Each structure stands twice: as structure tokens, then as C-alpha cells.
Amino acid sequence: MSYFNDRFFGILLIVLAVAYGWAASQFPVPFGGSEVVGPETFPHLLAVVLGVSSLYLLVRPDPDHSWPWSRTGIELIIALVVLALYAAALEPLGFIISTTLAVGTLCWRMGARPVKAYVTGAVAGVVVFLIFDFALDLPLPLGLLSFLEVG
Image 1 (tube, rainbow, N blue to C red):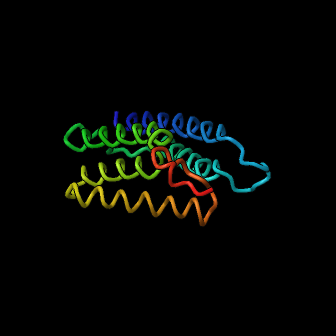
Image 2 (cartoon, rainbow, N blue to C red):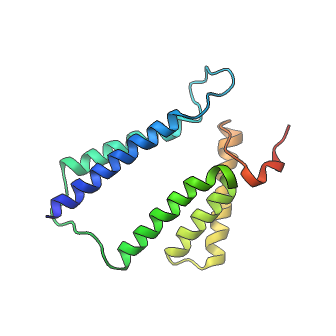
Image 3 (cartoon, rainbow, N blue to C red):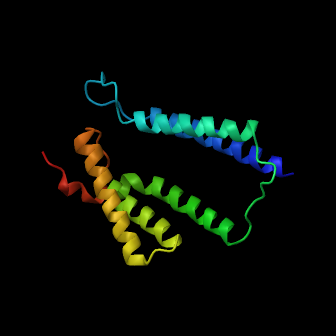
């Protein structure tokens, strides 16, 4: 029965990888359209890594694996809900605010004090936004902070 858990989870993750890769391919093409690295590059890379990892779960399941139906299982479900809400909030709230909320909530659930957790989320959101927007020239949605757009 324990082989079934990993294989079932592997199938779910393959479905997620395909859906994630397909969603990334739906991003609008930047002006000019001839860029090698576009906004879909990183999500496509993540989809491939997730797909390969999922195949590993199907081919080599852990014989001693069992579902964590204790507090750990509840925390995993909370993490999945937070990540789903994060994906839904990216466009309307923007990258910085949604990342602050998601990373802050996950840090808090892992035991950090709430203020430190959300400060960590805010720093992570701003730093990653600056890296993507300025260093990689890959724009991320500003959402509610769209008044900060230059030009």
C-alpha cells in the first residue's frame, strides 16, 4: 500500500507539472517576440524539474512511505492552500504583496514569530522583484503597487 502513496502523488505532480507548463506557455509574448529568455522561461524550467521529479516517484517509490495524517499532514494542506491562493493573488495584488503574504504565512506556520515571518516575506518579495525586473528584465505584476511603475 505504501508504494501506492508515492505513485499516486507522482501522478498528481505530473498533472500539476503539465498544467503549470501549459499555463506558462499562455503568457503574453513580449514586444518584439524574439527574446530567448522570456517570462515563460523560469516556469517552463520549473515544470520540467517537477515532471522529472514526479517520474522518479513513479519509478522508484519509497517502500516505507505513509501519509502524514498528523499535524504535519495538516500543515502540508495549509501550505498547498497558501500556494494556491498565492497563484490566484499574483495578478490582482501584485508580486510583492502576494509574495509577502505567502512567504510570511509559510514562515509563520513553520514557527517564526509573525512580525519576523512577514518581514522576511516582504524582503523576499522586494528582492526577487528587483532581481527579475531590473537584473533579468522580466517584468512581474505590480498589482496594487502599480503606481510605482516608472515611465
